Length: 577
Image: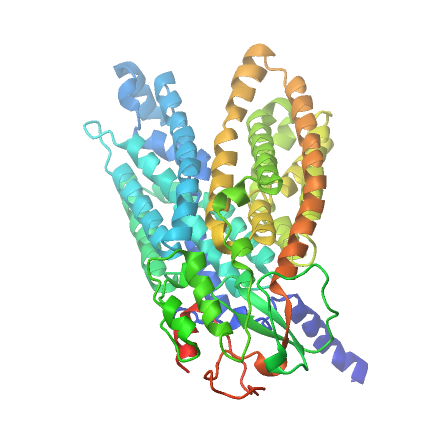
């Protein structure tokens, strides 16, 4: 065999390995529960999301399960009840209306609680949030399985199931923090898992067909799904999550003496040129997430004065930790407190955040209306293939997610928005081939439906308020997407007598309007990312980039041979040394 042929498989394997998430960043090697590899942990988080997040999205088979169980059959008269029991179909308008209303109730509850889930993640941590979500899910399915004519607990059951949806899903996004540099891909993997959770009702429907009772199906799923995932959450989700990528500060190494280094809190706009020496990664974990008090260390007397600040705010505790580190001859800096720990309102009341919320609303309404009105503008052949749009969207979802690790997210959002424009333009044309093309573009359009928003917020804003930002964006977009019901029932069916063309043109115009948001968002996001990067990168001698700080009496310059990861959890031990 020639050397060129022998080296070919190796070259292919090297290229495949290059596509995997990098492990060079210190965030990739941070501690995990039970010392599991980050890939094993990712599989566990995917399983939790796949099993228990947005299960009710598979409403077709789930509604059939409810009809077969006799849900709301008591609203029909005796003759209608007998017909319904024989045919196992809704033979009463009241029954059909009330069962279908359950989806709207569940959907609205889901997105109302999204905001609370985001706040809880930032305050109590992902573990507590996920435990609460799985508990709500578990209670919802147990109540649903126990309903009878005398105990009509269907409505509260779906309220609990909806409330637990994002409580279960959003905390799982913390797994992206152990894949620094590949967070876009990981977030889309989690988003795809959430979408695929809609197959769970199909599995439950198959089990019911095999002769299992409605109660056995619901309670069996409650034990194997939410209860099992509750155990996994308790074991494998850290109380405080993982250290976020933006908590790591990139320190450029120079050959300057330690004693001559002076690092101001705010960097001047005119920066000195950075020599091409190797960079050292130093992480400073925010005290907001570490939740540990700083003990006074021997490095300075000032540290003792500020160390015991258990009742102070997160920025104050973080500032005291950094101030204590700066007192010795070794200078360590981090992101400026005012910019990194700015109030949530300052992040929320920006054009970039308001813009991404409006964009998400447009996507939500466009997606929901397309699915509701598809039977009116697609040919019967094309309409039969619409059910495959959601499963097929998994493939472009993963590809687009990996692209976002190399390309800024806003150009990707521009591409996704263009697929939305095309799917609506093709929907205005006639013919099965054009219909299939419209569905293809629609599957790309919905592939990163929520993931693109999560990636944008992760790229543009700091991680201090990440939970609240994604939770409130999800809440606003989800609730306002309910206007698609009015667009279809009130406008299309009543006002236009079933003619979808006027509304399709209106949706086309609204999606085109999104370009007027995305283009300035591109320049705004680029500017903000540049400013955040400048605030995090500064010059410091390589011999000083160590978390093991010497006592104040040590002579300068100080030679530090071991370079370690410095986080809020290790600040106390670092100062003690």
